[in-house]
Image (cartoon, rainbow, N blue to C red):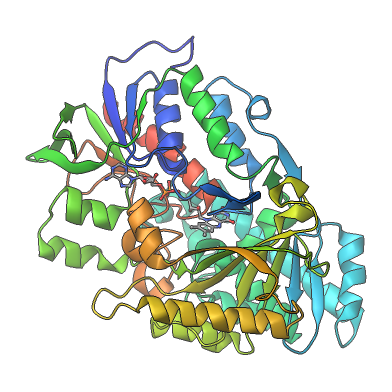
Length: 502
Ligand SMILES: Cc1cc2nc3c(=O)[nH]c(=O)nc-3n(C[C@H](O)[C@H](O)[C@H](O)COP(=O)(O)OP(=O)(O)OC[C@H]3O[C@@H](n4cnc5c(N)ncnc54)[C@H](O)[C@@H]3O)c2cc1C
């Protein structure tokens, strides 16, 4: 609680110290609640995680930091300044894009440099620039609309959206097209189409299934920058842990919650794996909603069936390599595109199969932070998006390793010569590891999928529909996955709890 906030004499247990849980705990403390966090792992941050192997510092989860304003507002709410806890460095260029036809194109924040860069593409550069500028104008309109209500008001349902936006929802928000359709209407250059479609990577969904207004995503980096957390992404978790200390919020690590105890339409507290029971006025759950309802609340199959529409976003094969040479052609963030991106989206999101030739995200952080690898070495993280685990037909470990081999073959073919031969350290996480480490739904890495037909791109509401004093936070809750979104979610959950208090 900040010095000026009176205590409410009301208690909250937060299940999970992922970014969504930490943000909710800090915001609730700032509102005068007594808060305690229970975390199954031995450290905070959840998917924001790291490992150090033989002098290579690997960020196991997020590598791109965007929308700093949503983080700053959390610190402000706690009466503190973010820059006293976390330092950000801007990343240039934003991304480097590699295509199978040999085309390479950077995404650059500076307009004059971006305009120059477009001259690398076949065709008329002025025409490309006009389409690029027009697309950003359309994307900015979509961003501003979504930001004003869905983000900042913390809207949770279609009814709340209709009440807030009124006619603008139908007239201004681009929901009649898919993301891909709106891109196709605005770009005729195939490389640009593929690049803008793959902005969907921020939420682990398919540009074919997500609504057009999700084309707001380029704006998060073109207007608000693309950042690295100085010293490594995990320094964000360290900064948040210091804020918890300063606010006297206790965290119990190695404390897995195995049950949320309930009585009628209320929850009473939680039971830990150790057998200990704790009670509270409110429970805020940062474990994903579907596994929480299934495993912690043992809800009936009929209810679990009803919430299946909040299907998991994609998972990923996360491959970390330390190499004994530097690949100079790489920027900090890189994409190696699939020959056929339509097929990639279709295989992962419609068929639920491991793709033959996925679009690959590759991070080489030493371009911004040389401390992440020994001198003369490279630190490379490779992340193709793949389906969440199908419980009825789970891929074998060999299937995942075959994908790893295909991906490395592709990278070698596209210029990372002898990548395999130069690898001196390797660490791989499959969807099975991701599910085990964070209790995510079938190994999802961004919470709930944004799919117009399945869920109109909504995630779960912040307040449980079954228990009045149970709230959810994190990537499976509106506004969804990605660090800025879950940090925002925690703040909006606190607003809902305050509202429930009356
Ligand atoms: C490989 C990868 C790359 C990514 N890249 C980016 C990126 O570049 N930029 C970006 O913004 N986002 C990225 N993301 C997504 C981002 O990491 C997540 O959206 C965000 O960190 C999720 O936060 P969360 O609070 O929802 O959940 P989590 O981080 O999963 O936190 C949940 C926490 O709850 C704990 N928990 C679960 N069950 C229990 C229980 N029963 N008892 C006690 N504790 C429990 C877990 O251990 C965990 O600490 C990436 C994710 C991954 C995995």
